[in-house]
Length: 418
Image (tube, rainbow, N blue to C red):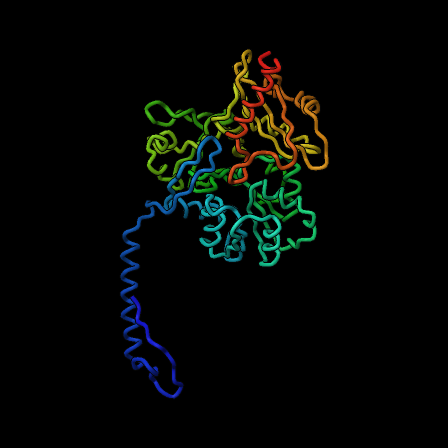
């Protein structure tokens, strides 16, 4: 409700021309204000922190995207932990250029600076040049992106000319990176950080120290916040209870329990039950182990490859290949059916611009790995040809399909199943 009058104040009289006397108008306005306050109080009382706040579709890194319902409590708990870990405050000016349909663009990048009283500088869509321009123009002092976004900015011909001197911290997330990436990132700001994040956990759930130390970032994905404890566990049991917790150093399912866990997948109770155990543990779908340095990521559970009975985590193979930093921009590893090995490893490697890269070079590099971890086949991709999903992460379902197509071609030439 509102009261509409043509208002023109007269400096000599305590009235408003063409309207009510000032006293009556202010009384009417106060009545309206009281009514709005009562309506707001009623609305607040009707909404619980445990109610749904927004639906965010997962990135679909292991299949079709699913609609995850996040709660008010989950988002604000994540804002509290993320801000405390990475030093958000009233001084923060954070660039928000991740997709608004992504948990990183909503719960993390947008809501966290607002939660802590800072400023969010927003772009409608990601553009490498416009992001850097906005950071310089609006005094952005904190930037959080996924690796592919940084890579696109660094490849700009005019990148060195952008004034990024105001950046105090840069944060990356979404996937593993090689040491050369960290070295380049450290040149952008005095402090850098990372962690593990996912839609079902309302955003970030582990945190590295906000530091300039590359060794610390290369060592792990950091530690969980006390508010949202982490556990490495065996697969969920058939009765829906969480599997046994594994000891330090042993690889298993990365799980969390606490206020950040999402409410469930919309209209999909079966998928929800496969993700949240009956005793409240969120199964992230990630594999890893913990040490005194924090969480060590091994790969997605669905993409674990088992050549000749061995268990190979794609992330370990990818890290080894990406260490060939002179020529490798990024890589993705998947398994494909093999008549002798049951499953064999296919590696898709994107070369850096301006260099030549042959499969034979990659095979030589792979000799440093255990024999059962070495890819049986390499596919060299041109710059920019690695398939990415809507969040600019490697599209593993697409890679899996590409691997099957590649294997079919090899089989036709009798170059597979040997």
